[in-house]
Length: 178
Image (tube, rainbow, N blue to C red; front, side, top):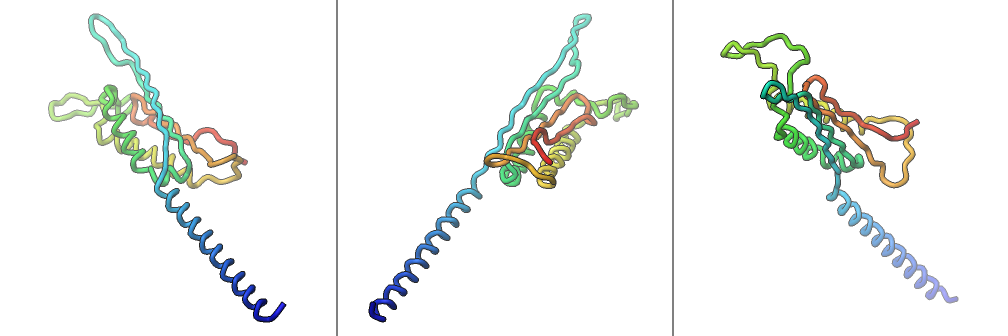
């Protein structure tokens, strides 16, 4: 082989290798951009309540609403604010949210008319939901130990909101960790 042909082959190989590298980098950049803009979180709700009918009147006798939220860390990171606002809006617009009590056995608090008001305000309910749900989502990002998964790791959070503001809770469930 002549030196000119050897140099030509070396240049062609170098150029083709660099072109392949550029196309691989470009494909990876496009993949990351597409993935960063899409996320999906599934939220389901299960609500139960009881009524008491006595002497011609009916009364609410306890209730709870359980939200089950499923997604990956990436999904929770991208959709946190929308998850919070969706659950807050859904719960506070339910017919039972007006019956959430501040405490189980509250001491009588008086309003301007002198009557005790044992019920939590919409703002108090919103703040409590935000607090417990934010804490549960933060817990996903601070988990330690090894987790065995096949495919993307799905995190499940269960939130239970009942007729007592102090008993509102959210926590991650499931999974196998070492």
